[in-house]
Image (tube, rainbow, N blue to C red):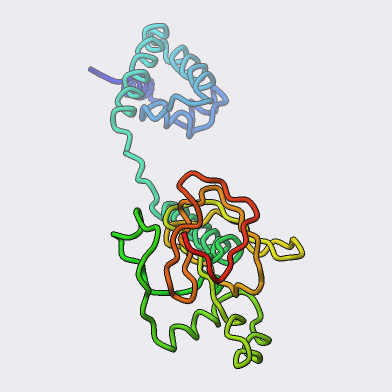
Length: 262
């Protein structure tokens, strides 16, 4: 079956006319005549004008214009469907993926650095004394316990690690042994605790975690307030004296002394 372009070409040749002759007669560009005869008309914005040129060309050749126009439209529609079937898959550019990944990585690094520099604070400061761990068997039931053995260096570490300035205590140690008496509060289970000095200044106020410890010199007479006294174990100069109160007791402004025992 002949195409529209072949019908036009045969019609023109039968009248011994050249493409230039047709172009001059119809005032149509030679390239349009060539496209019509080569079936090279696309379904685009110029389609309506090309159909008008086709009609003029067909009428000039005394052809069945209506049949040719109908066939042209059908062929154009068929070709459009074939083009849709043969659409080449779009290959995704991996470069943009890499750019997005790189940007996300930079944001993550900046956020992490900001967190560790300005938000995260190390709670394991020197205000918590380091003493030998209490045996687990004593923690839930201890009211009184045996004396912990510790060497001289451990005892010195306890004195260095508390918050207070103990220079005066060191200076007078040879005259009064009570000056250097160290009290350590060991947390058996999480509980809130606050310590205030004699001027009511807050020394410590926080939720203490299990196994946290805080040491200070008894001569400072800190006032202890706690949400659960049964979770706080008292150790004076490495000697376990018992819990500061019963489990569930609320402690308010309690002051420890060297002879405390419970």
